[in-house]
Image (cartoon, rainbow, N blue to C red; front, side, top):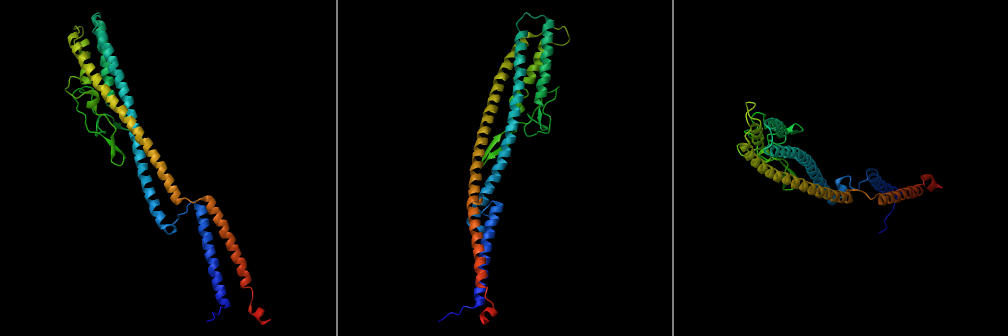
Length: 304
């Protein structure tokens, strides 16, 4: 059977081919302008599922990174305050040893008592330390002041931990409670109780009353115990800071890997895309040139 090809069929096929060439050129131009080879799900149905998964994981990691940054800031601040509390305790030990050497007149002991009283006020101030308007040593009740100057040794701060999630299933506490740092109320190694007792022992009331060095010696023992327990707390904070740094490095490595995988899935190869676009443009120009020759004959041309 002979198939008759008409001029209309030739023109219709020509227009269809030119349209396809334009579409291919448009796709390449779109990829080149956006820098992505997946601009809609139909571009790569399988690739878009991986791309969405990578985007989700990158978004989750971004939140973990923000948590780590906040945790690192809180732990570093806590370590700074603990260093200041350490200085207070060191000074209190030095003054106590000086007061117990047995060669000081009462006036010197009174001066030591006054200075220890200043250290007591400093310790209470550090116990009420704040960062971003939140109290550092009052557990989860960060909006309430844990200690008062008059009753610090008997004040009961909250002892709950605040934890930040830094990875899937991994939570790191970022605070130390007041009881861990200063000692629980009522305990002999409570720092506020010790400092208040040393002040009263060296500079008793009324003025001129002899110092009670026996009490001071007992408090010196309690101060040494509190200092040892305090060093354990500082070690925990240091270990926590190291763990946060390790998690920070791990998250950054993971984010880098996910970004690379996402880029390989979604981003266009610019050299390849430019080459393909130039090829599509040449094909399009060739189809236009060929079409101009094909549809050139008219009815008058046939009648000649």
